[in-house]
Image (tube, rainbow, N blue to C red; front, side):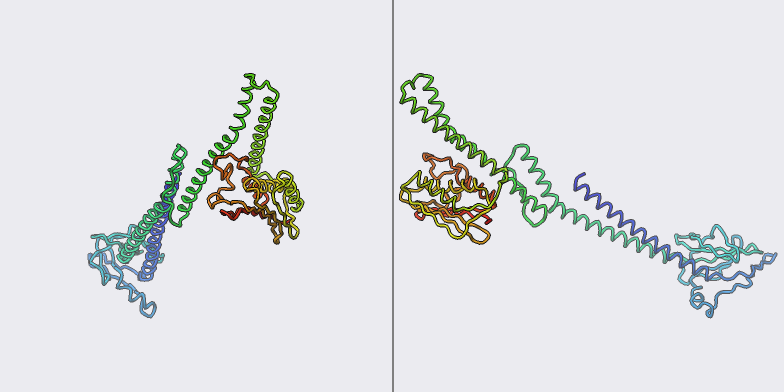
Length: 460
């Protein structure tokens, strides 16, 4: 069942409830008015003493018909003028009272008469002419074939009921108009964006990845959903683009060493590697290409593990020995470089020692690889309350703002020709390991002012 159909059903139920309440109100008021008139009739009915009707054809004699006096019931004596009272003999009537505000109509006789001394039971009857209704009581004489008819007009009751019906119908129309307006408003602001989201989802499932939800403005929940859908689609498209770029870069990085290995194997099959020195050089190049592919595969595997959120075994680790080892390793591989170490306080972090060593090694290797021989590299570590800060700074040529914004992207290198060694994954691995330690990493660089990478990790 769709949401729109549910709204229609709810509106129909609400209208039905309003109509039912209106009908119950009219019936309740009408019933209350009838009870009041019945009470007035029972109070106003005279006590029947006797109906002395001569045996001849003379007019009937009424003896006595006692009406309530003002001392007994002042309100009832003044009310007698509101009733129709007549002595009925066969088809003839001797009218005693008629309503002062009557329009000349005469009530019909009730089907059943009440014996004297019993509580009169009123019934609703029509008029002998016209559509006016009456509430009447017919009392039979015990000794004579005459009856006493007391009736009250229901014109006021019918008028009140008609006004209430009109008011109930008007209220129903107002509710209907409000429901129509609310339905239009809800449909325009609420259901239409949802329907558009559904259409966009169907279009994307059909292969049109460029579709977006257009009605994403406003502060409604549906508009917020539409904006969230657009953001999700944009993020998904960006992720797909990054994945395609990642595959292209990985293929590019692997193509060169694979081409070297395949080329040397072809030369060997052709017998071009018979000389010892040529064969040794070929084997050396095969080893270099194999190590390059092995390092790339290891880096990719590490990034995959980091992307999966694989947990690390974190424990207190002092960064100072790790930094000392990194400085000694760099001095061994490049003894002419000027590398300094500055440690203050107790830089003990909660982390994984192997991951922390890789962070420091990647940052130092990056600085050695992308700075000239005369550039200075400085490693700093200090504690700042709940965080330990690690800086790796160099006085090299630096990068532009655009290059610095892409520095942590996978396979990205400032040297577009890719002639320099490295896979372009060093800083991406650093960012992944730092994120696994719940830390942050930032890069500050500029032309002719060098580059500084700052890593902040939770203190132990």
